[in-house]
Each structure stands twice: as C-alpha cells, then as structure tokens.
Length: 539
Image (cartoon, rainbow, N blue to C red; front, top):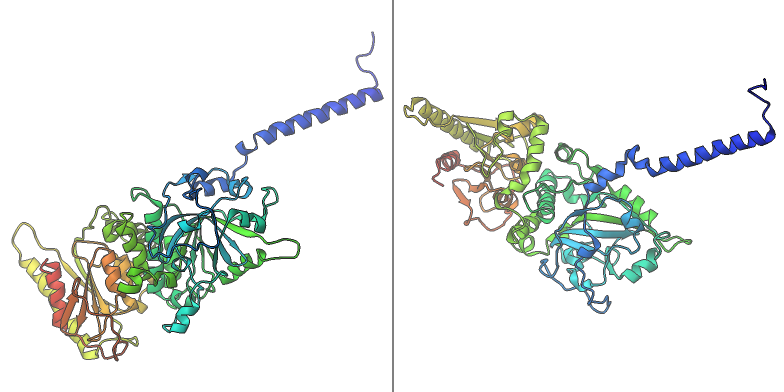
C-alpha cells in the first residue's frame, strides 16, 4: 500500500504559506468592516449631546456678499439677527474638520453680552466669525470686549472697546486663505462638545454673587432660552473657559464658587488663562504654516462689558444677567418666575443632601412648605453690619413674632390649623456649605444686611410668599439682590431703618457714606411686621 503521508516538496510549502496569508488578509478586511460593532466609540456619545445644525439651516443670505466697506449693523438687540433654534444632532465627530467646505458661523441667539454661536473659530487669540453675510451679525461691541479689568472712567471704558485682535468677521474665502482650502490639509481642529466662554476679568469672578448669582445664573438662563422650547432640558455643557482668570481667580475665599460649580455641573471641564494661552500659542503664525484655528461647534460667549452696553443692564439695573433673563422673557424664549433655574438649584439641593420631602415638592409653578421658616443671616462678625443694639432688637422682634405665631397655632381650634413657624439666626461662616444649602432650601423669608450673604436666595424654594428682606444704610440702594429676587418670582423688600420699599417703589441707586460700614441702623419691629404681613398675604 502506498504511504498516506509523503515528504512536503518546496512547491507544497509555498502553496500552504500563500493560503495562510490569504486567510489572514481576508479576515482582517472583515474585521475592519465591523470594527465599530466591537469597539466603544467614546466620541459618539459626546457628539450626540452636542447640538448642531445641518448646513441648509444656516441663516446667511446668499444674496448678501461679504464686503469690508459695509460694517455690521450696530444694534443692542438680536432683532437684526436671524436666530436659528433647530437643534439637529450630528453623528460623525469628524464632519466639521473634514467637510468639503468650512462651516459658516451662525448665531442661535443674541442679546448684549450674551451670544450663542454655531461654528465659531479662534486663531492666535482672535475669535473669527466666518460668513458671507456680515450684515446679519450685531455690532461686535455688543458681543465682546478686550476683557480688561473694569473701572468707571472714560479712559478705561474706551480701553474695553473690542479691537480686531478680539473678534473679526471674515469671508469664507479669507478663512480658506488663512487655514487652507482642501479638507485633507485644512489647518482647523474641532474642539468637540458645547462650550461656555466667559470673557470676564477675574475682578468679578472671585465673588459668590457675581460668579453664581450673576454669571452662572445668566448663562444658564440664556442657554436654556436659546437652546430649548422650555419643554425639554437644555443640552449639556462640556467645557467652561476663563481666558482672563487663573485657577484661583474664579474661586472665592469661602470656596462656594467651586462647590456650586462642581455640584451643578459635575462633568464639566474647566480651562483657565494658561490653558487658553496654550490654544493661542498652538494656533499662532509659524514660518512653515499660515496659521491654525480651533473650531467650536456650539459656544456661548459671555462678556460683562458688552452686557453693560445693553438697555437692561446699562440703563436700568446694572445686572449683566438681566440682559439674558429679561431679554429672552421679552421674546417669549424664557418663562417668568425662574422655573428654568430649578434644574441647577435642585442639583445643589441633591448634592447637599436636602431632605427628600423638600425635593418632592419641586413640581409645579409654586412649591409648598409645611413650616414658615424665617432665616436671618447675621453679619455682625464682618466688616459691614448692623449697629449692635439694633441687631439685638431685631433678634428680639423676630423671636417674639415666631413665639406668638406658634402660640396662636396651639390655641387654634378650627379645622385648618396654621402652619408652625421657625426662626434661624445664622452666621454662614460657622456652617458647612452643605448646612447652608439645606437651610436655604427650607427658607420662606430670608433677611440680612445688603451684600454677599443674601446670595443664597438663588437656592430658596419659590412659594407664593417667598421673600427677601435687605437692610440698607438709609439713602443707599443697589439692584443686585432686588433684581435677582424678582427674576426668581419672589418678593424683595429694601429696608431703611423703619421704612421699606418694594416692587414698583424701589429707591434710586446710591452709595452714601456709611453704606459699607458697621453702623447700619434698623428698627426690629418694622422688619418683623413686614414678615408677618407678607406671610399673611397683606403685602
């Protein structure tokens, strides 16, 4: 019988080797084709959360040619802008970088100091609007500034006017000259996700009120109004950039800014001045290339100086957030009463461990409380406070009021028994941040000397009788907490010793001698009467 096996010839070995190589080659092709089914694409989910528009939805008009001889129309509103509110998610994170044409810049929404852009570019520190229709954009001075420290002098005001180094409108042809025409060699890199760019100096960032109750308050209002129909939550924020502040510059001394920011936006990435400088240097001109650009698919630009050039902030209340809030309320893009803020406030409540019964009462226009909680934030250990005897008199008047109301409740024999009353007299610096948030979440009436301590009003529940009472040196007044209280649908009272003012009758802004001092007078029984009448529905 012939043997079953024989010695392999050289020809046999070559054929076996070729067969193995062929199987490996075709297996590799099959794997390549199904790669996305077995590998997690970490960019895919990010881009689903990033809101973009299809190119056919861009609002630029093809019949308007770019012409440097026609500057943008000066306007303090976006009625000259055609905002585009149609969010359509894109699945491919590389579309913008490798698309055949560079996406043109469009505006989603704009008011002085607040602008949401689609497809904004930055190169060498300059923000670039790429458009064939420059007349569709508001004047640059209503969008940005130099970001310098603010002083109330004509010289400083002039220095904060934007220059071409801050922002430019360029044609698509100019953009191609700068960064390349062909998609394969274009020097434009997309910064994926949604970005907040805060162009304010650190002068105002390291302050609890200005950072949380003004900047973040206004940013969230504008983002919500610009990006949603109010029936859905706004898209997430992936990144916040502070180009004029160090890491320490946006943090306040007590640490509430960082606490608030991380609790409200736990996944956000923060970039500061040195990070911005990295982007500037990486996109600066070099001998080999004409320059590079960073592309931001969706970006909210906030600028304090630009907001002060608007009607609401500049002429009425000096609150930058009012341009965002009042401006979008006027357009029907934002609801009255601050319901849009509840997502942020509730995030703080959850972070601080607020009682579940309070969390469960947050649905509807108004929230309900089982107890009337009066919270007096004492600043007697600080530099700005009441006359010591007047502080003592105020505490006595409040204690007597609460004791009397609880006695009336105990003696009541009807079916609808009045609610119990509770008084908190606190020094915030002696409490943890969690404790401060938990107290604010239960507070019906918040009172204190004017200033930063009242910033916790943004964490209060909105009930039909929610109230903030702010005690001023007689003759002095500022809109800071008065405007913010009203924006959240609550009632504000300004007290001058034994006289009070409220909505429709607020004093003129003034800072008399003694305004920031340690001898602020107040008549305790007047404040107690305001509290009682307000809770009783008399005022």
